[in-house]
Image (cartoon, rainbow, N blue to C red; front, top):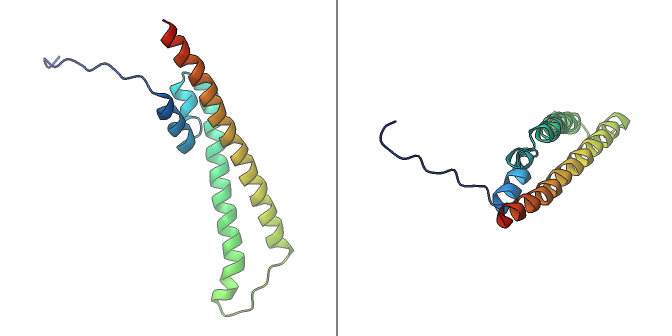
Length: 118
């Protein structure tokens, strides 16, 4: 030891847990001590994020590349199919995000009330 006392680790407040879960799905579960659930939420959230980014890039490329080349804007069935897939991916991501937030709040309330009773 260097002679300094280590400061005690401050427990996460409810707002800390909510903000963590809002910005990084699965982080709220991790802080709540639910590491398996954190992985089950975090990994699919990351995959959905990457998938949404790729689909957005593909749609933008299909729509704006011809326009930038001076051609007429044409949105065909392939672009609609990609956009439908993008909407499904975004819907799944939003549902998983909301679940992660609600679960974080419910578990955190229970944990914080149990700690307060002690």
